[in-house]
Length: 154
Image 1 (tube, one colour):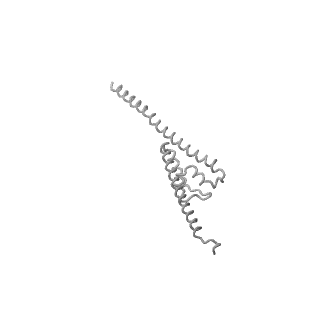
Image 2: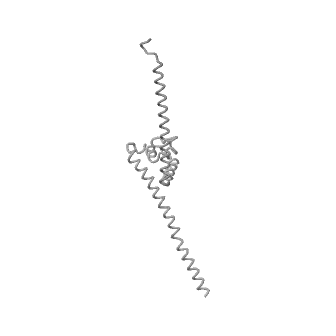
Image 3: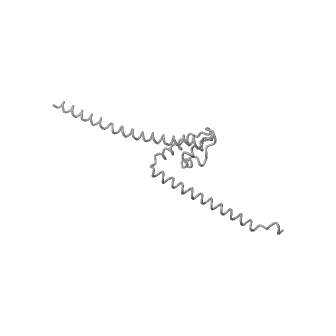
């Protein structure tokens, strides 16, 4: 009788383990699928930029264009201070850029909209500053014209 009881316990343990495995396996599969889908998303974005917006440039010299097109935010974060030279390959910064693209792809649509709104507002502020500077420069030029002595009075 004891051997029969031990067998049932062993069978139950094996069944519990077998039932637990598909659940854990399913989680890793679904997260792997999400990563793969995100990876396809940003790779497709790079490809679209390479074949569309930046197609007029030579392949070896279009890295800045493609990166800026794929993600202006990531480009500003990684390359803005020191853009790539034509034909240059910087593996370390390329890895950082791709990591940034992957993080962007991971964001929820709401987060993306908020980030885009912030970028639009920042661009509007920069444009307003440029407009203000232009107005000041135009005003200074106009003042100089008014204070200048006309040639016919000399």
